[in-house]
Length: 314
Image 1 (cartoon, rainbow, N blue to C red):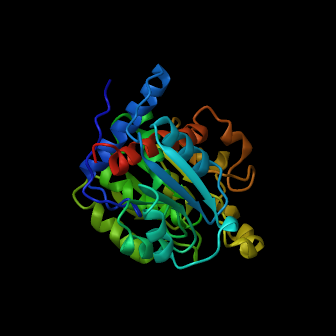
Image 2: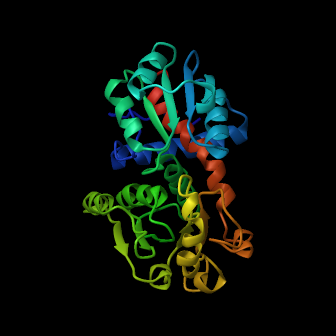
Image 3: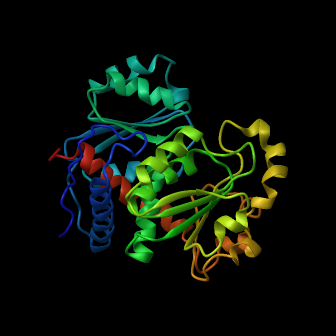
């Protein structure tokens, strides 16, 4: 069966920018092979005799289950640790202890600096399952979803409307180097990091994609091949929810806004979602909705990532 292990130059995966365009393409190709192999009943053993720790400092459904099943189906062993079940200590100490027990660590945390501090002392791969600044594992699944529907990513227009959060950051950093144009619209004061935008534009040069900011959701969505949104209030910002709801209402992904996209445009959301808040319930169930396909692809894409970082041939 197809699905040769990719060879990554980087030991870690924190933002996704560690991977070259070629490495990212190889990862996505392996992710799709993993999906096909699972359907055919073929079991890989790339993580045989390997132990992976999943470290959670934020609640999780998709990240927890997709990583756990991915590791198990690759023949590895997995141990989950929640923040409530351990004492607080410096990230540098945590990773040095875990490195004596296991072969890789996935971390779902708050400040991105926690991951950077771990990497500075880690002899084993560290994977970002989500931080306040980046969510690269989700974008791996998103790119796989786009490839499943469109085959070739070059020239695709993806519109993002809503909060300029970790989700948008990762889309900006990873999609354009694969040839995707990312057009985004965020309320004033909720735009993505200017540093991330500059980095994304620089990475996109000569890659066929691009980064484009728009003043209105309609302008961002016009003629797009996919429309993406996320919750208006991410974890850690709950105290702002009432104010955010007022500011973001014009950015709701609803039937009127969606009508400006291509008639076959995919409807995307990283989940969890609040139906009839940032996205209407009818669009969630629309024939072009791929929300649950995105969620499933987390497992396949993360299998490919784990094979490249931790697999027996790495």
